[in-house]
Length: 41
Image (cartoon, rainbow, N blue to C red; front, side):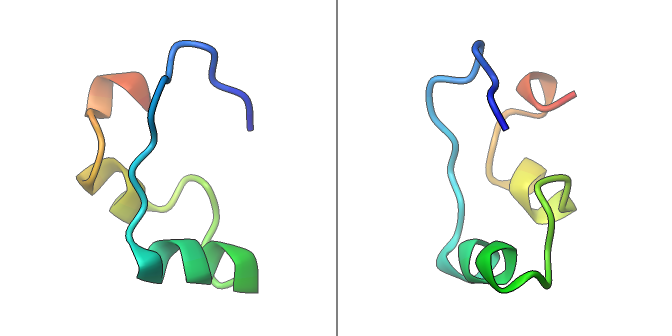
């Protein structure tokens, strides 16, 4: 995923682990909870 307008993306350790293990994807709502929603729309 390449989002030119996003300088920083905050992920909790749990979400990051879930993404790498295949349990979660990049559109997981937990990511929006930790980041500005308007950058992820």
